[in-house]
Length: 305
Length: 305
Figure 1 (cartoon, rainbow over the protein chains, first blue to last red):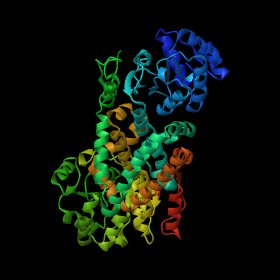
Figure 2: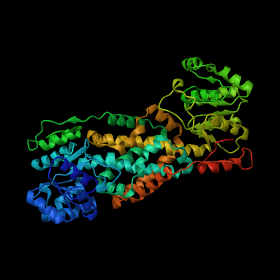
Figure 3: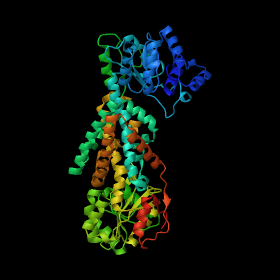
Figure 4: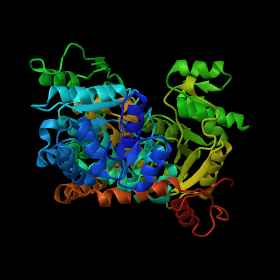
């Protein structure tokens, strides 16, 4: 486990709790000392940690922030070139590109556990963080079925359900449901504040809920949104078109009918979305990548493998 | 009380509970019968109800949906031209214009209690609906101080605090904090649904909260937004500019810094807004209208008069 923050630390805890042998690296010595004090095998020596992984052909998990990914991958290529590789970074296509740039593509299957809290760091880590969470396992063309299965089994061992999705589809989806909501919340907060204390004093539930995530730490919001800039740009452009069309209807006919009725239907669809279990698709069987992706697109999840 | 729905019915109950003599009109006989069964003086005969008001120079309160306002005002002009007049409709400048068109401007002071529930109709009405709510009392140029005071005292008697605001400022403020949030929620719901069951299945708190009010009945959202079309258009245009600027920064520099940092500051300002009590401004005293409006703009409320 490379990186022992909230996600990486929780994954080290969860893997050990699931009966696996696992050890971790963190750049800062203080997190390493905390992890050791809690009884875990942790080190600030990246070469040593990766050497141990290479000797055992262990699954290497990259769990550092996006700006640190490149440096960590260079070390993986140098010290653990024979290990299967995954990651828990919140964006998939950029990580996949960095992996390819280091010549590690053949042994890599990306992952993204959709879990987190407002806190961060080893001290916030929790072996149960991934229980009942959704863990996206990247299902790209040419992926190695054995490594794909190893990553999916890790997710299942941590208590998550697995959603198979192509990296670019994952990034497009999280842009819509995680990153765009932040930009709209920031814009709504600005509109309210531009109305001064009169407007803010009249604000009730719709404004409070619509701006809640604008209260998140700007550095975290920026890191999340900017790492997924291409997909977020596409989602934002689509929404600008929707709002501009609504603007025209409001100006020309004083009508909000089209937007309001379509938005209501969309929210109902969200409220009624149901997960169903994917069964009978064996990794490595004919067309398994396309079949898993198709199932994931239709709301399917793996609960066992 | 003209109209015995959620707001009008609650106001009839609250006024009687506060020791006032009050009676009501409703177009539908069933609500009238329910109100009578609950012990209230109610009638479906608008001329009779207004005749009684005219005889006693009672304060007439218009509490019907915006599309019905014009017809009710015509009856007020015919049967109760000597009464002071207010309303509890959620938009102020359009009601004020309709009042002026019926020659009733001199006796009118608009009002808007910021209260409501998801339910509607007499059966949902509650004498405590306005307790600790914010009640905007329109503070426009040339307003009659005695009528202004009568409307403010009614709001205070119902347990609300009074925010003095000019009609157009009220409409601009509620466009920002109540109507724009609905349009953004609808647009966000559409973006999520366009990502299919994959995106909707990955959605978590930011999407759930950001789309919550898209689940409101479309007819109610439309009525609210479209009655305030001019002010909503201005707020929407401002937000389209903010989002377009953010789009350019994202496309050109993969940066969200400006929007995210400003939005965070705006949300903090909202979280920290504090109501303070306006004292020492007597309606009718020199510059009282400007002084009250200025206090309302700065977050002041009246708790007594």
